[in-house]
Image 1 (cartoon, rainbow, N blue to C red):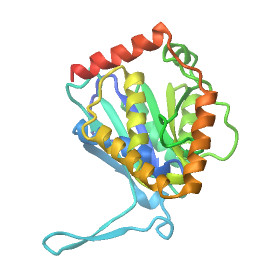
Image 2: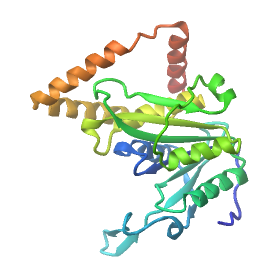
Image 3: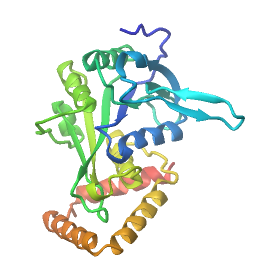
Image 4: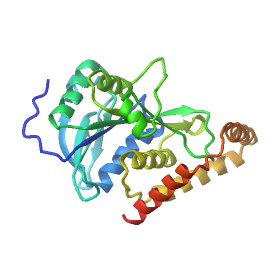
Length: 280
């Protein structure tokens, strides 16, 4: 177990985590954490020992060359960042890495032990999966929690999923067992364009995160990148009649299944989001 020394004192911290690999279709969730790191000027706090958790024949190190011709290696790792600033009255702990290959129980204890020492008040995990969602419609984001207070306060759902899970699911379950409030956000990526990146899904995760945190997060180029991604997929679909027909079927099924949400509460939520963003 890592000894966490000289940890900072944080203001009502919230931990946000995402991991590349099985949990992260089109690298949408890890892309969301990367975006948060950049817009919040997050600093590295520590790195979990990679030799404890990674099989280097599965997740190989990457070799690179600098502009000056020097060679170096980047090893697979899980890093912990801290974001402190004027964006909120809270501080944020960001965890990003590759899903570990081994010792998942120990890895989970490490993460939750760090959360406890930093007095984390809420854990938010993010993931992405492939689905039959059409690319031309909003990316569905499922938001679940096991804590009864969070379910009511944030209008979340209870997860009824049963089956294989990844490290995101293991962390979420461990939080529930140890009484740590935890929210899990999952983006559904169109399976026929599941290659990385998918900025539209990353944007959807960031916007749902804004709702959960009740803050405005700078979006920078994400909206433009999302529109460019959708235009590119439209062009690919238009060039293939079979794919175009399939997308049309998905669109019809999605539109038929959805009921329009025009309640006063929904309109009020959108207006509040507009006001938050105008003040950033």
